[in-house]
Length: 219
Image (tube, rainbow, N blue to C red; front, side, top):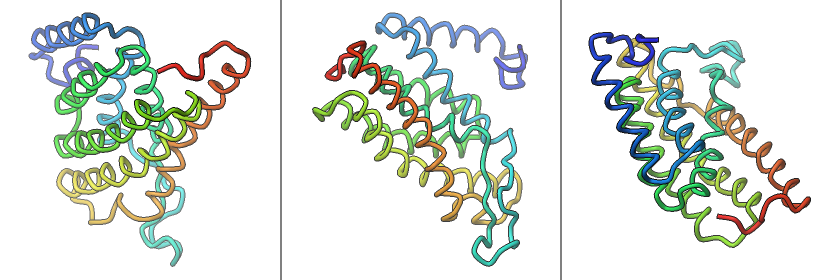
């Protein structure tokens, strides 16, 4: 547990615990509750996982002329798609203060993940979550539609920037060849994986809207 909390630096346990306590205390004071805490924990975990948990090959490299780089899928890809949905629930919980929570999550990524991946993640989230926030804030669609559309617009941008960073990080950290992560088929698989989670959550919310259990106009 100590190794997990300190990213393998046990001597940093006290400052790490203090910083975590300050982070979650700030979230609470900003009126963030369950979804906000999940969001701040989820983003650093996912960024860490892309540097530690290996991808599995759907198609091996050079096995087919159609897939010269192969096609790989990271076990956390679908969970990554849930980030956009979780962020939407955080906005319902905290309104525009969600932007502060987004910044906290990215900041913690620099502690737990490879710096290049953390930087790529920060840029990706700044762009894609901005698109997501605009869609969720200013459109008049029903809640279930906003969740789906915001993910649809945000996922391709996030995937492009993040895979570029992951590609570069593997070149620096592992000596991998350029194009190891950022290529067309990998991009397609990642976007599809991310959208699956959004589609499922949107369908559940739409069902609740139809039953009168959730307000379609809710922020």
